[in-house]
Length: 496
Image 1: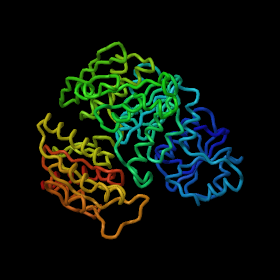
Image 2: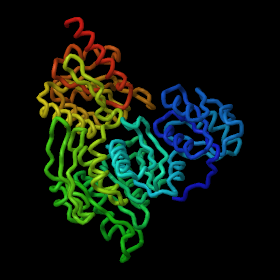
Image 3: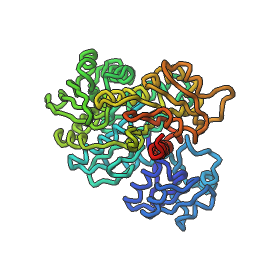
């Protein structure tokens, strides 16, 4: 895929406050480009951008194209999030101003850097964030763009002085095919976003296409504990991949490395072992594991991961291997991972009141919910806590209908579940469909609570000292974690 030529001297961004768009804006501003933009509502992200020099309008109008005085040289949008009849997009077309996707601009910003891209159905943001923390600890000062804010840095993007660029590669609309990484990590491949791709086969194929974007001499890193990622890695490492590319008999242009537990590595001898995880031990402080790196002459490192869960150890291992393949010091990478204290909305600790701990997590797919509730259960067992109470808001009607059974099975890992109404986001309601279709598949205690503001009191009535409460979902449920803490505090003060 050839990138379009673009003059980035004056960039106007439609939907500039979004997680991905705001990150691009930060980097553009840091590189000395002029940036303007618009969004439907004000936010902390927009306040930070205006403080850095961006000109931002609240509300969409064709006149916003004049915010910089001169017309922009390019207009940037997310085709999935911004409708084509947006007045700024229409105005740009009438004026002949090029309209680019966010991913195209990010790819242009990476052109003079060695890119480490982290992709997969789940875990992209956390894994990208750990890679950033690791490389920063190794002294490389990478540029980065991620879909969430690093807790310590409080930002989602940075223009670094080093030659490495770390980014989260989003597959949801195929836009990651704009990138050409030096190292690409695939955490997992499991059908999702079928509203866009239509079939599971089309969804899996886009990861094959992404693997073909890795630069010659580069590396594809896959998690062999995940069947989908392992299948991709085995195919790319095979002679069949070369034949399908019309390169039969030629040397592979890229190297494939697998990472994962010893059992998974041994089960996939067709994929060269890059990093082997052994001796995982769960403690109240997190998870400890021993990592051997066959990709780097069998170097061995002890890795401590603060964020709970075996899946987080695997993610950390991929970050370690990805950074090491770019030449960073392994011991320093491990130190950075050990100091990493998380990303907002990824097992994000909000506080404790009356002995009840409250966390928030962005999980919105059954596999993600299984991972976060398994991690919660491990933490409860390690610390001797009580029940796990999950407050879940399904995201999208289409996803809820497709995975109702799988959602129910995943939520069965909690002791009690409160099901909120479906957050439709870009979708219209479907008659007769609500989150109770998930409850039918929960093996355990659950209740349906469609009234948003009633949820905190529901939690108060269920939670006791020693319990862990998790608000889970990609929608407005994140607003409830602090409300639940306040409700618990009020109940404790009242002696309830």
